[in-house]
Structure formats: C-alpha cells, structure tokens
Length: 200
Image (cartoon, rainbow, N blue to C red):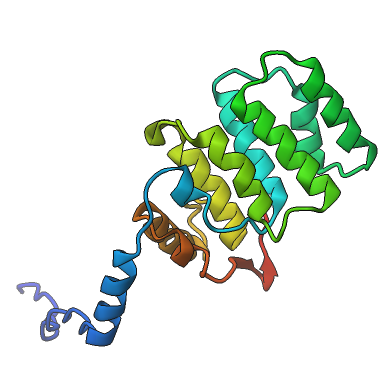
C-alpha cells in the first residue's frame, strides 16, 4: 500500500505592500528638506536633556584618542558625583594642566556647568562642545556623538539589543544618520516595564 502525503492547503496570496499614505510621504519630504549639516553646528543644535551625556561624550572622545590623563574624571562620571567642591577642583585642574586638549577641556567645562546647574536649558553644553568638535572628522566621532545623543534623547543606547526598544533605536538612528537631529529628539523615551531605561 502506497503512503499518501497529506494534502497541502491552498497557497496564501503574496502579502501586499502597505499603501503609502501620501500625506505622510509629503511630511517626510518636507522634514528631509530641513536636514542639518553633518558637523558640530548640526550635532549640537538641539539642547541636551541630561548634562551627564554631554560630559560622557567629550570624555569618551578624549579617551578614544588616548588624550586623557584624568582617571578621576572617569570615576566622577561613572558615579555621577555632584559635590559642590568638585566645581573648584575642576577649575584647579584646568589651570594646572598645560596641554589640555579641546575634548578634555569640554568635558571639564560641561561638568562645571552641570554642577552649577547653569545649563540654560541644555544649550550651554552645546556652546562648549561646538568649538571642541569644530574641526573633528565626522568619520571618527559620529558613532560617539550618535550614541550619547541617543541616550540623551530616548534614554537608551543606540546599539540594537534585540529587545522591545529596538524599534525606537532604529527610528532614532534613521533620523540621526539623515541629519534630522531635531526629529530624532522628538521621539518618545524608550521604556522597560513602564520605566524609562537610562544607560549610564
């Protein structure tokens, strides 16, 4: 007796691509016209929400170039130290160190602004970072900038984690990489079990 294979059901029709809403297409086109330049003026136009992210950016870029002789600053950043006397300690270090690099100086100044709570709604950090990054090669700093801006914008890393926040990470990356920095900051914060996920 010959074995009969079970009959397969009818073939499913191929999935149709979703219809493109013309209004959304027009909106995307208009937004794209307002993309900002891939330079310090574009990267640092939107104010920072958390000054620690500005400090971390300057510190990471400085350390990536092996220009930092401040392990204590990394320690302050990791612990999120905010003691008032730290402001004057930073000022002394800035005077003592002769060959302070632009990135190291920016990290220290951003820390002072953070401690003094005088960020002007997050704009003061940009005033410090623009001169430091003015001559930076976008190829060498873009990943660090996107990472810290993503943390500042949606509260989590820009690196895909295979979790429920990857959709927002993808949206942020798409906007940021296309120069739509303001749009990237309009995204809602990433969440984990109803809590905002903050990456230190």
